[in-house]
Amino acid sequence: MTEARWLNKNYIPTTEEYISVSTISCCSTLLILTSYIGMGDIVTENIFNWLTNEPIFANAAATISRVMDEIVSSEVFILRVLPTGVLRALVKDIKIEIIGKL
Image 1 (cartoon, rainbow, N blue to C red):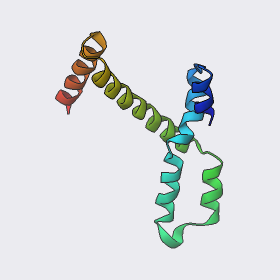
Image 2 (cartoon, helix red, strand yellow):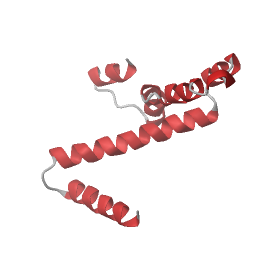
Image 3 (cartoon, helix red, strand yellow):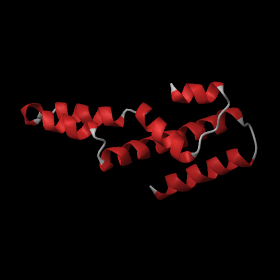
C-alpha cells in the first residue's frame, strides 16, 4: 500500500525508505518460513517467533532479493522502451561482460 501511495502522490522515497517498504513485497521471509515448514517435525513454534522478529539474515536476504529484482526490471524496461541510446548500450555491454565471466 505504501508503494501505491508513493506512486499516486508522485513521491520519490529515499533509498532507505524504499528498501524498508519494498522488502516486504518480495516475500523472501515467506520463502524462508515455507522452507522451514517443509522440514517437517523439526519445526517448532520458536522458529516462527524467531523469524517474525526479523533476524539480520532474513532482512539481508530480502534486501538482496529486492535489489536483484530491481536490476532485472530496469534492464527489461531499458531494453523494451529505449530503442537506442547510451542506457540501452550500457545494459547490453554489461550483460555481455557478465555472461562472458560465467
